[in-house]
Amino acid sequence: MYKTQMNDVVYQIWPRSFKDSNGDGIGDIQGIISKLDYLQSLGIKTIWLCPVYVSPNSDYGYDISDYYNIQPEFGTMADMDQLIHEAKNRGIGILMDLVANHTSSEHPWFKKAMADPESKYRDYYFFQEGKNGKEPNNWISVFGGPAWTKSNRDNEYYLTMFTPQQVDLNWKNPEVRQEIYKIMTFWMNKGIAGFRMDVINIIAKAEGLPDKDPHKKGLQFAGDLIVSQPMSHEYLREMYEEVMSKYPGLYLGEGMIVNKDSCAQYCGFDRKELDMMFHFDLALIGCGPLGKYDFTKLYHWTIPDFKNIFTKWNVAAYENKFWMGNFLSNHDNGRSVSRFGDEKRFRAQSQKALLVSTMTAYGTPFIYQGEEIGMTNMKIDEKDWEDFEAISDFKMLKQMFHLPRFIRLYVIQKMTRDNARTIMQWDSGEHAGFSTKKPWYLINPNHKEINVKDDLEDKDSILNFTKELIAYHQTHSALRSGSFKPVMESHKQILAYVREDENEKLMVLINLDNKPALFKADDYQEMRTQLCNYSTYGPMDKKMVFRPYEARIVKLVSQNP
Image (spheres, rainbow, N blue to C red):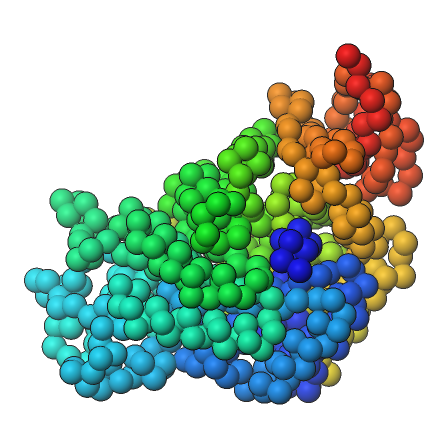
């Protein structure tokens, strides 16, 4: 069971925008249940479910006020139990989000800490006195502005590394850690398949929470004081002993500023910490050093840039014996075809090509809802922004960089998380088959052309290609656990690599360009195309032209000595 989960394709659901069952315009658990047959038909074996716990929604579920109950707009605990049971009946496991770096300011622990200065819950969080009429240190929050929020007492602040309503937990307190393990145990006993752990590499902070570069003016990002502190590994090893070793499942870490060395520490095969990690180097391609709202590179990137990041991470994971979760789109990042493909001229071809790269990389493939039909970003007006990060950074880009409004609009509209949170496009109807009434958020107008119903009826659609690709991945061991070797590394258009185990040797070839690309190889006696993202294709030749975004999985039959 454990190994199956490690190798199978994961489908990520952001519940609020997935499917509404009761006509209130908000996606819910019964809506997900109604689509389990659809997910099973895709070949999905694991669902990553974004938070459905009780939350005031300052950051749409990533600010949790009750870890043991379900947000009423999503349903009830009975609905959640039914989802776990119905999914299991279809051979699908549920991976839940564990948000353990912070709680909502509405959580009972924090309310008790605020109400009583002698409460034990004061030590569940970070409370400190301000300095010189300002915050306790010069850290900037991830979403912009000071990383501290003023409490209800004179000159007292508490640490909030994200929104002011998301209060950082003090993992140094063993009672906090035990509370987290109790939460995990509660859900594992319900039969879920494991957890995706939100920003798990910042649960430990530098002792004393010192200033970052105290001689510099202004707020600063305290990366080296919060990211992958040594104690984070101690805490995760304790979590392994207390929970993960007792409940076989899938335990996935999401972190900030991860690199190949830190991933090897967090999820190396012999580390007894996590099973896998995400990296964000592809998601941040073309961004400046300060992250996705750093416009200094104007989001320009090249195919060699993409190849270099893709190849280095795959090689590092294989050679250093750690496992990665591979994705190109999720709830925090825009649609993959808009970011990496050509959504206007070659939407179908480029989305299929990108799916091939995800499905054949070394690690576990992740598909985000709508990616299987090639959903795209849309230009979202300022009045429709829901993303706290985008709204906050729109202000910060003016305050810190004095950018004119038209540039700030360009930056936010390109990178806002709202791009990934538009309504799932089930059909071409008025509400895209999502609900019987106007949804809580925007529907992309292109749902009339891009939707599940139409794709199901088109044998050459992105959706039907995704089914074929997942089935191929499931039945070919070289793609599930084989070695990874890059080839044609200097080619300026084609991403190429070999996946091999004792059963087979496969070469993956993907033209990442919207222009034809020349392929030339003399090493192999015979190459047989197993899968191609174009519906019509000829045999593989040692010298041939790949069409725009053409992708092939090729079986290497024999090799010249």
